[in-house]
Image 1 (cartoon, rainbow, N blue to C red):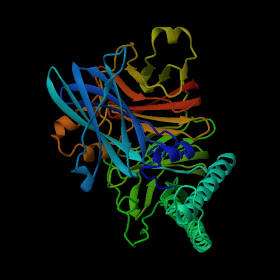
Image 2: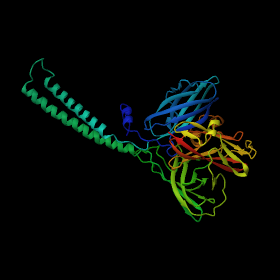
Image 3: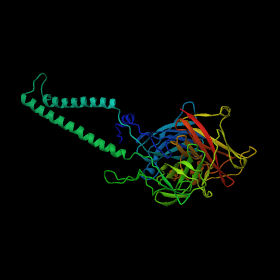
Length: 497
């Protein structure tokens, strides 16, 4: 439904749609970046209904910050140049390094939260990309609908009574009886008013229903990718676009509606394709098909083991809006071809709880705290931001000295739930895409804007900010590049509410 200013709070209480973001059922945004001299970790919980309120948390990781201000802005278009007045974020009681705030997101599409920090070293700012959409609208419950209908009838009857009394008695002195002619005239006017009011309610309901249906057509629908094999090991994929542009009632096309001819590269590729075997999740592949047509891509598969695979296809639109399209495919036994370029993966990953073996005697260690290591398996809580910290060690247990940047970053992490309904492609900077960050930071120097993107590993370590969106069992795949070879570590996690 389209929310009116006078009824927004009431409607939000009645109908709470689900929010959808880049990654399937993983709505919150995590961004680790720099606002000038200040290192910040920003968490954004997008509104569950648009228009709606986004919840913002800013943790100061490094630097002496005295004041934080936040404002919502469009990433591209006219709204990107017309900044509203900033809101002051409040320092959390008992935690001098945490600031919180709220912002109204007034329409669907690609937004950014502009964060301005001020402290001992002056001022700094950063933009945090936030996709904002609604996927569903809940219907009003029957008891509440009945109650509102009764109250509406009482209100309508009272209004008709007021009109009748005003026409019959407004000009009479106290205790004076209305003449018969005046009473008849008042009765006629009362009947006319009742007909007009009932008509207004009837046609208003028709208009409201049509408006609600038009708004519902703008709700975001999860796209599904189609995939099939050709010529042996050539995998063809075709993206779906259920959110295609369509004109509004005035024939004007909505510029925020998504297209398949507006994709922009992220980490140097238009499409990041993930294949994960189910139900064992031992085979994991991160591929980058070539574009062969509008929304169509193809890639020669490596020696992927046969079986059923879940497909997750990451793309970014020209507005900075990211999407993950989902699908599945059954693959036969394939001879395959050698991996090329940035393509990577492994056929028989054994998931550890805090240690995953790599090639050449190397290993990847999930750096849990000491207490957690003594109490394996570790249990995590949902909706709590945590740092996923990993260390790559050589055969002697020392930090690996030959790590390289992989697609412009220290590493990549893919997280998927055991039922396949939750997927997130995460970077050291968080859940945001480099393409969206680049658009959000266009007004700043490139070196400053990308300072938080962690384009190189340090001392064999790589970390990712994230929070499990809900309870369940998860598989975590962490990819780093060492001595020209992409290594993949696999881990398991159990999450409770």
